[in-house]
Length: 67
Image (cartoon, rainbow, N blue to C red; front, side, top):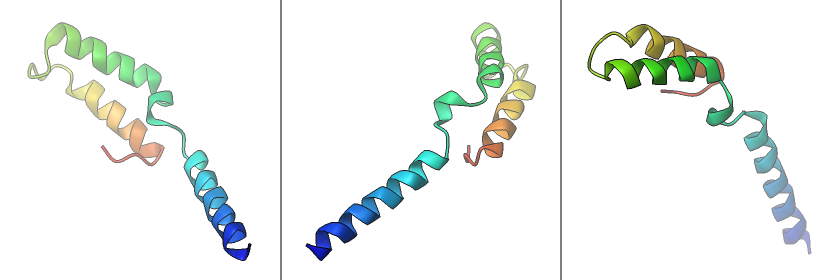
């Protein structure tokens, strides 16, 4: 019985840690849109979109994501 309670406690703590951080798909939406639009119309290798890529990376890093 004690093992079951400990296991439930660990699962609950793990879920709390996961829910503290937002999902990457839900943050930096405007930066992501600008980056994607630029790459779509100019191509990834054009060099014209570096400003938007850097803005997106900086925004994501602000939420704790490593890109």
